[in-house]
Image 1 (spheres, rainbow, N blue to C red):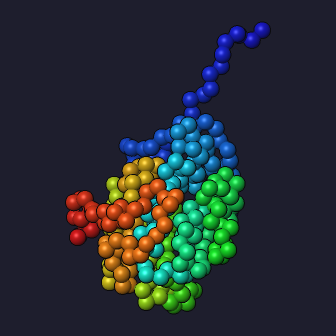
Image 2: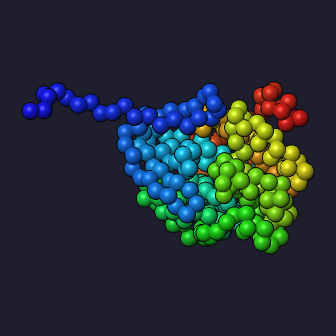
Image 3: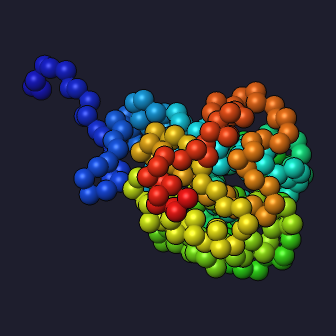
Length: 285
């Protein structure tokens, strides 16, 4: 006869290490999905406190609880710096969060998203419908393709704003962090164009941030770094913005319906460009 006692659930945790000595852990309720695509491993976990968690090659991409603080800042800072962002390109961003934010802008007439892994889009549609709703906007066109090759072949003066919503510079995303790739983006931008990319942790990826900023300074007359607080990325997260004409530190240049936003405001827009001293020294500002 089996012992008569209650079996408690296992105490399961997932940790991503940001360095050899520091990491971030989530208590896990259960695994929802795990598979290998043609490009990477994809996992969806249900956490106790942060909702569903998306992993690509074991790296945290987003949680339902705090994804807004990343996607809102990646999108609204450049789109509200540009006077008329009618045609927008997204490289990566297969979860759909970036598209969701872009489609809030009525001025945008067309969005092209280039995502290398169609399986990420499918998984997001299934498990993260609140992010993936942007895929159904009639202004959105999806290209399942290599973003590096796409930009190398992109005609000049094609886009008003280009956003790079990529994973870390490993595997298929490594080429998205090169001077050559940014030069292709610069060529593809119109005369008032803006390029914005996620450029890593200002604590744990300082070499990457400095390298991206040097490339932007070389290519653009206006090169800025701004920050957002993203808990599931370990704290602060950095974005690099290169602009051919308009300086983002002036703040948003037109009214925008902020209904539904949870992080971005005009004051946050301006304040995000105020950097701590250690980053000013790192970047030579």
